[in-house]
Image (cartoon, rainbow over all chains, first blue to last red; front, top):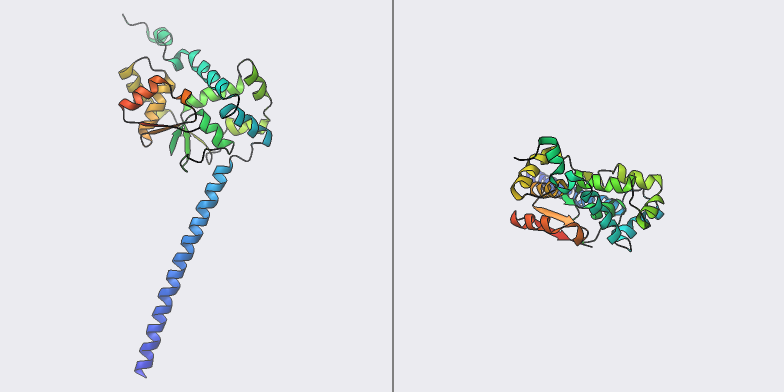
Length: 98
Length: 138
């Protein structure tokens, strides 16, 4: 009698442990799926971008207009003394070093 | 979080990130964002101007107000003191260079560029001096 009760206790404990382990494995698999889904969504880009917009952005970053885009960005810096590091603006604000 | 230039920022928003780019949230320094916005709102003359004029409002909005899931704009305030120190130390440094280097120091001592041209000689020299690794992926 006592022997069968202890066997039942061991069996119940074993079942509880394996069930918990299965839950851990399942949640780990679900977590990985979730991460992969988030990664896939991030890699897909902003849904507001249209197919035409995507083509234009590809042209200016990796396509035929990539150099032109680089020139335009450089122009923004060159034409702005704060961005270019030129001393003219600093001098006009704080006075030239004497 | 990794610090990127305008090229990788635009590519991420457009869903065209290079495979080699780490799968982490992307951050664009504010002065670089300013340069990008200038091109969106006041495109230069010529072919670039014409092509950017063809963008739909939703395409523009995605860059004007980027979803942080795809691109975050770095708050310049916590970086300004470091940027000023860098500018004072190295001299002849514009805000985009100093701020980007300061951001690189703050975020893992790495900077990610989508084109070699965007790195610039001055930034490369300062980054090397400060042990910041520059990655260029096309």
